[in-house]
Length: 163
Image 1 (cartoon, rainbow, N blue to C red):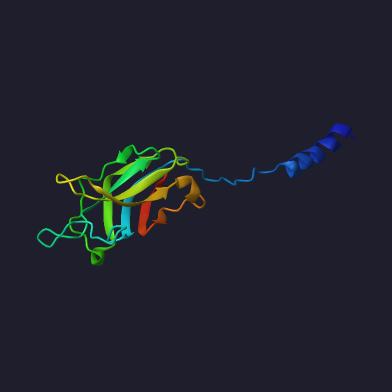
Image 2: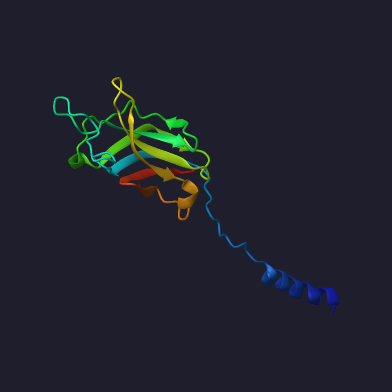
């Protein structure tokens, strides 16, 4: 008997048994986020001194609310002055701000702010009601599409898509 004929089947079996499929543990890793909508669920209805946001001309004393998204130095990423909710009463909360064009956040490690403002133009400057910090890297675990943020009486729910 030829030794090569006897060893060849054994080598084939050994090669077959040593073949391993790669472990398909594909882990998704997103690095960007698009904001589709923000829901304002809570906000202080008076300023720090206890006064109403507006002076009450013709009975309108509630704030005229809009949201901005800003970077860490105050540059406006999204200007919300085109979507003001006039004379917003607490009973009207939550208020939904939807964006027909999602707002991209390309640097999820950078700190952003969602500011809630009272529109007082053209009579005076707008009032900052408050703001919340949005740092998407802090919310990356599990890639949630809904993120709740709260600070100083302001609560918003950010809904978006990781990509």
